[in-house]
Length: 210
Image (cartoon, rainbow, N blue to C red):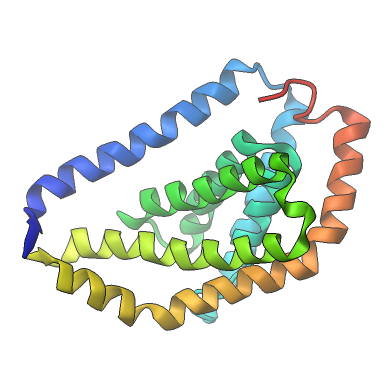
């Protein structure tokens, strides 16, 4: 069964992705952030981008998702989204820009945003749930990016094509999920403690609740 015409999706979807991102940047700007509030977003975005570039030789295995999740946990949903979005943009300056960039910005942005939301609910006090979130985030990231491939390169777009794409990407999605879990296990505790001290000491991204 054909789901939709290729031409319509190619026009509508990028517009929707842009519209999804704009409110986050506007909301952050409306808080009138000080330079010290911008610093952790910039630094963590660069770290995530460089980490992704370093591990580019291993398909789908990279620390960027873990860095984005940590950013959301420590500095809130808005900062998490911005870190995810900007790290995707920055890393693709090294790895190559393309129509996939907007999709990656949205996917990593939402990953950081939901990490911030879940952190505030207290769910991540249970370490197992944090690691589960990291693993599932990697899987869902892959499925989301499959849509970019399907819409951009597959016609006609059918349910069978969607299923085939998800099956073909299983290895890469599992690698992304496992790498996110591993890097969270390694980085979250030491980085979390240091970032929390900086946040408390300087009032970074914590003096104006989102």
